[in-house]
Length: 469
Ligand code: PHE
Image 1 (cartoon, rainbow, N blue to C red):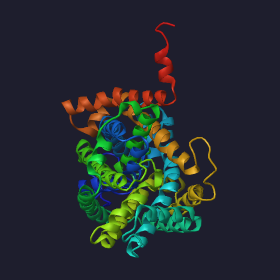
Image 2 (cartoon, protein in one colour):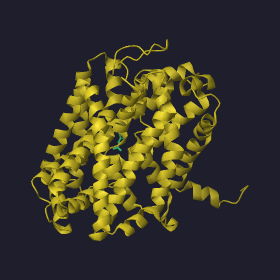
Image 3 (cartoon, rainbow, N blue to C red):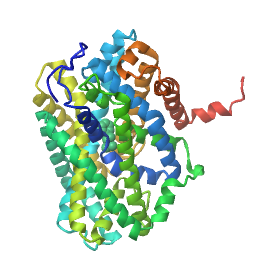
Image 4 (tube, rainbow, N blue to C red):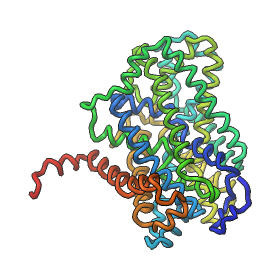
């Protein structure tokens, strides 16, 4: 980021600007591509029966996620402040009222909750870097790999240790504000990750049940689709794109005025989707070839991938590199999860970035213990949707992010004047603009509301009532 003004005469950013359009694309891609693509997508797809879920997910990504990502970027750039302050300011400017700041606040809260469990999973990834390097997976079979994973997850001291290491790294990076280093990391990481996924894909195709995997992912079995499946797909779309919680808004605040929002958002969404689909194509053939249960849940990739690495030439090298890259991908997402909170804290309490990062990091680290224990001490303590971690995950991905996204699209579609929108999107009255506006005003909000109603069973109840009664 440079500290120079964008030179557009509009509001200036309090934290400087991205050095280029590519830097912004890389930063948002770094935020979007993470555990959501490699760890969560395959296991949620597995739990929800594959094909139909994947298709609904893709529809959500392009029909709802992309327009919301554009909207969120636009709000960030127009507000040029942290998400809470930006929403308050724009709410007032556009005649909607300062209470729109709640969108930002809910994002700050979601960031705390998500990072608290995200860091636990990322910690396991770090542990797997060491395991790969030590050769623990060499020639291993499914049972060995599964017991390795259970030993790690069930050992709260080890899990807590790795969670702590990951949080410390995240806080150090956020505190130093080393955006330049990050830009470079992402430039290398995303292509390297795609490269190694392609190598793995080759291995899955050669040795796994590839056809079964592809069928599982793309052959929809509509009979398996329920309100919860659709909600899970919607939640996954929000989570993987990092939208609905002010993270894209925070990054948008540092975006120079002349950068095209539709082009950057599309690039990010396509990169993110490719990584998720590739991960699924890598995982499921291994899952079926080794009799692993696709419904294995959060341990799925940790039970499947080491089987490939353990049985392929150069597996120690590729395995280590892969988990290292996933760790990096998680780090660039973790940083973005802290950004709304840190920017808000710095601006509201007039403190330094370093101090804000440390305080916020400590709170998140402590909260993380509820997820650490979810696989050991508190594994049997279940309420609502399961363990603490299950509940944090459900509450954020499936409730808070979609609600945040709903408010964002309603704001951009209905509250903000067309002049302001045109100022930011700068695509005139083109077909692209009209599509965006239609999706933003009608499709995205209605879809989110319908999914909620469907998930809680109200839609069926409403539909079952004879008209007029
Ligand atoms: N999109 C990230 C991932 O897929 C997670 C994330 C969610 C990051 C929300 C920021 C905000 O791993």
